[in-house]
Length: 344
Ligand SMILES: Nc1ncnc2c1ncn2[C@@H]1O[C@H](COP(=O)(O)OP(=O)(O)O)[C@@H](O)[C@H]1O
Ligand SMILES: [Mg+2]
Image (cartoon, rainbow, N blue to C red; front, side):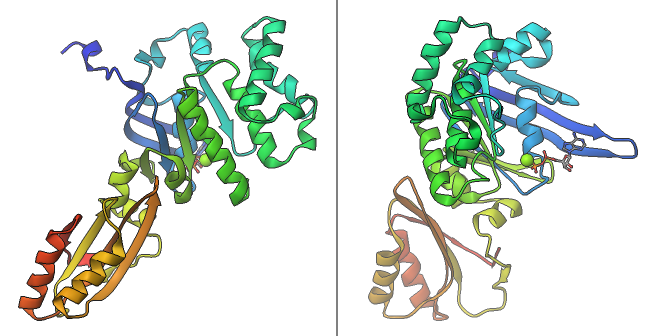
């Protein structure tokens, strides 16, 4: 198959076999190891991992602020390694970026900050002014056009940074811990703004975070990065309802501890709720119908996009007739069911 045929037409960023090693005087750090990731147009793609996992390095490799040691980065089907310096600069204008610390120029007004990337792109002065007005409307900050960053709250500063990042009409917006310096209420309003930008302006959004709540709030897809590697990735629904790796289980159930059910009387079943039903009626009807209590060993629900997701580990009665009756009842409900022997 020719190289070109392999390119996924819907992808905006495709990362293939990417590794990054930082060489310092006395040591080497393998910040990223063999990363493979496809981000499609229109996704709100979350990348989550602990501090030092390699998140910032990964996102900086997406626009070649950091050059990978090995592997490929394709942006809209084009290999960044094959680009000249000028092409790379032009491509970077299609990739906006915002940061935890906002990175505004303190000596410049809001308007002058937003004009900055347009000055570099040599856009007409009068066009710059018109664009600033549009952008400030999008981020709902028109009244601060002449303010200086020091006169703004954290949330307002991030709105200015978002307006600046959108100035050159990017296809992708990279957000590196963009809400990590903000309080919960401001975080929610910035996430709502990012979602709006994704929907209204059709911009793919990549969100780096260490907080699961940020992923829950707005992401369609999530990749879990652990110790410089992608542990798993997929839709948020998939990862939340069926975390496969230990790192995913730890993130989805941070308070879970290893429960070992071997040798305990009674079967243990995992009931997965995937947005088609809710916990309470299913469990209470089962108990009423079978006239026997169950022991709930673990339960965790999440509300994603207004639908209930989550899972429950239930210990069924020792009596096989009763436990079979319960299993048969559960099979008639809109839930997934499996017997489990341990659980993180
Ligand atoms: N410029 C650099 N030089 C040397 N080591 C670096 C550099 N940037 C990052 N690292 C190392 O790479 C690893 C991943 O860092 P980073 O991508 O910043 O993680 P995260 O954003 O997930 O906290 C860390 O061990 C960090 O110390
Ligand atoms: Mg980081």
